[in-house]
Image (cartoon, rainbow, N blue to C red):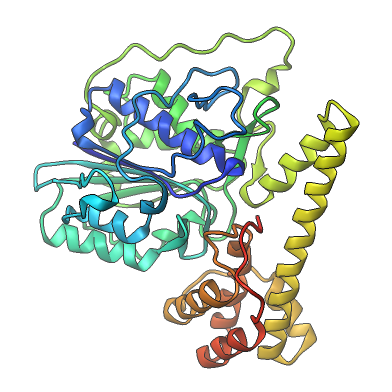
Length: 416
């Protein structure tokens, strides 16, 4: 059994992605998967972040236990890249300059579990300062299948519109089973806002599978049973499954570790909190709205006038930056459509992505010229407009020319 755990994001707003991944490590390690068969990719900027009130500790549950201890740091910071991820996944040699050099040294008899948490958009997930495209991922899977790199492989993906990573792309006959936090057109959700840490500790779908694995006997529970629990309890987004459904009859432990454990200790309920506080979902917020919600909470929870003033300024700045990005994209679509009504439609429509090559060409140009979507999370929300343009058969050259013409602002960072 080989396990690959990836958090693609960075920054304190995105605390939850690395917390989810650290928690996943604790589960597979407790279930007997040795470190030399676990590969972790994460920025590693959370545990010792200046914002962290408990330096060196990361929690994934209110009042939870530390999940950071012992986590291998195979690929961190600038090495959290989609190209390195695909090399690791396919078991190719990775230059030691990028990290531990560990790759999935798997063969025809090995099972593989891949868990990924980050932001996403249609047909892609954010990954460090770049993106991993659905087509590239599925091509890699088919390549691995042909090269007999695994027996069975399972993907759990936490990201907005994560269903679009597999829908219509993952064949049912390559021994791969995948579940995703959302379908191909909706957001995934964050939960467990923590007042002391001023950020969300987890994501709903991830928390549901992680806490299910914590308490169930995963050597008996099947993937299908876990999927059903997670789907039922994740009332915020449409949890989906793809690929080879026969695999879903296998025990969770086949992919999360073969050794039975006694459940990790459950934090005791502090008396003065309402019960809803304890269930992830009550305070759930769509991924894209997390920075807004955090800053709004910081205004409400400010202890001094000074703190409130600072929180208000940060909030105003965030909203202004978002508006700036929206206006750039609006101008850009205007140039392409030359029709105000159509521009507004393209800004708001939500359709399924089928025109991959047009869309990816537009995304790459936008990422390069307008807003790096790895450095500006909010940029991912703008990509839907390119889905709509491509699905309406606008010419890709007109789209890229408009991007070239409209995006003349300098390089930006931090529009979340």
